[in-house]
Image (cartoon, rainbow, N blue to C red; front, side):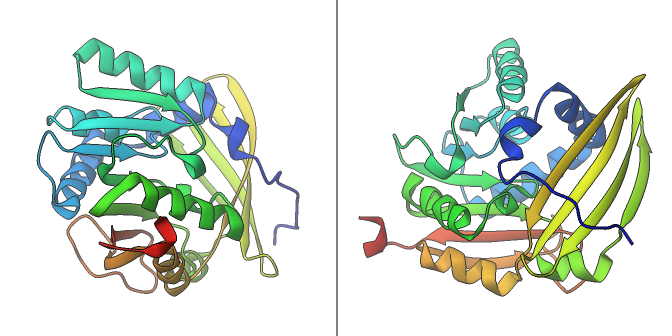
Length: 260
């Protein structure tokens, strides 16, 4: 069994540099992005040119797919490398997408968004206080009745039944070997990995806060976001224990004194 090891609480502020971003680009096929986009559009219940915020947007995988369909997309991320990749792609295709560098716990609030998406385990980067700030940020940035789609593989019902202390997989151009340690006191899953891209080797450490789906629903509710559905895949199948992925759909309540 892997022994405990340290991961900085602010690991995500410096993690998403070129190597990590190239890894994600290599890992996800275009068909998966297209399927995600279809789910997002269906459950946000919006049509172009509705405004969608993607936070965090990474290198723009979902933001660009939505912009290609005519949505006005604002991507927010803390990674300068990821934002540069996204902006370059949007400019090259003349897409209605803009990209801003900001902490998603403090989203720049301008025109209220018709929908917000937060994909790829991102909601689990923070401790309880940070998660509370994140959900309040989402609620404030949404119009009344606007919807939120969250994608995560870090709910307890997903992580704990399938927990592995070691994993290795190869992909085109490299490999990723990781060790994990679950801290039951903090409910945090820590990972240290060796990422190989060609001849280059990168040592990575990251951590995710693990909560039950019930805790997640209650935390969203406290921020004024009502959960509408829990799904295990983009085909709208109901979430069950052991499903590796949760897609949660919520909406901002029409009125909420916490947001005024």
